[in-house]
Image (cartoon, rainbow, N blue to C red):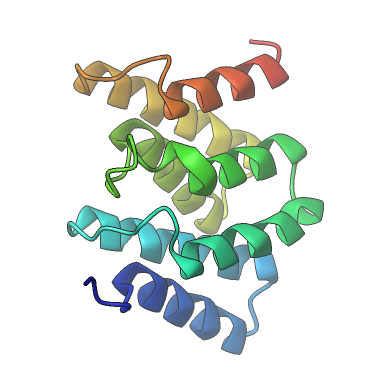
Length: 153
């Protein structure tokens, strides 16, 4: 039997509540929570694809769509929905993880959305080059392809 404790959820919840309490807007609080998830993954944490916390985060992220570029919102949802998990292993896809982390960090650092997206694109390409196992047919590859198509690339 696995423990119901989900460290990524706990860290994400704490980050969101801290940002909310500090008066930050919902999108900023959401990105801070997502970065807390990412940091937990980078420490080796696993989150089950059927995690109630992950499912709640996906529902909440759907409400944030109206606050940002639809392509960015779709990418964020895809990141949480399927691209983050490689083959249901509970481990993050390193390529999508790098791109998402770079985008959110740049955005939170005050970069305009276009610059944050450009930085995420560079991080994506760098991660593809560093990851010999990257598969364009993987969920991450399909999400990236859909995003690039939506941008006319």
